[in-house]
Figure (cartoon, one colour):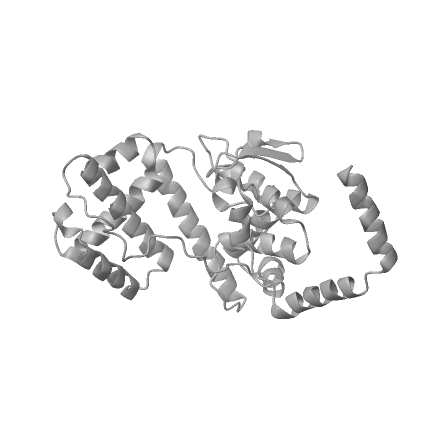
Length: 317
């Protein structure tokens, strides 16, 4: 049943989802030490032990939850098809939620060092330019950068749909970002591309699952180069492309930009998603806000109170 479902996902071009299901089934098969899984092996005891097995392999809570949820989905499909016996609260003892992710923003001093310290090699310089573009283009995800086409750039405005959510995005390209775009022209002269992508990340020659794998390889390569750049500059942090997006959002928050604006700049459909990105304020900053709030109340004058009461009376008429 699992194999059939994965095949259907591929037919629907849902390669990423198919890949996750495939990994989950393969992982559970290794845990059970069998090539032929059965629904009878999905028991409370096995699920608890499987979760512990994944934790011992250093998987993060969200990764463990994803694998368990994939098994749960297949199990319920089996129940609906009459091939698995329904057990009430079968997955009750294992975590299937979403853990608040580790904050991935980079402190401003180290971010400046990462993006603007001169580097010796062309590879690292190109990595710097692309990382800087991710930040300057409103924390653009790497996947959106990779799939940008020349037609998306109209003058100094980028118009495109986010790859993940299909949300329409309009970004005015900063003059500093335009300087980085010269990298595009250089590579276009040396690389023939079937699709007119804006950057030298994807070939555009592959279709279907092969195109998905090409993107995954490009993402892994960029993240390796980004970590190499950090290591070269003696920045002792684990850095990925998504750090640029988190750093962009966090810097806006510390500059007291309203969360509604941050959410719109990031192209999020929900402010709840934006809140996940943002680091909590430090105790000192929270104390300062609390102190100012209290002093505002304490020093509130009688006249101001009377004015407010008059305003409220007008509003209630």
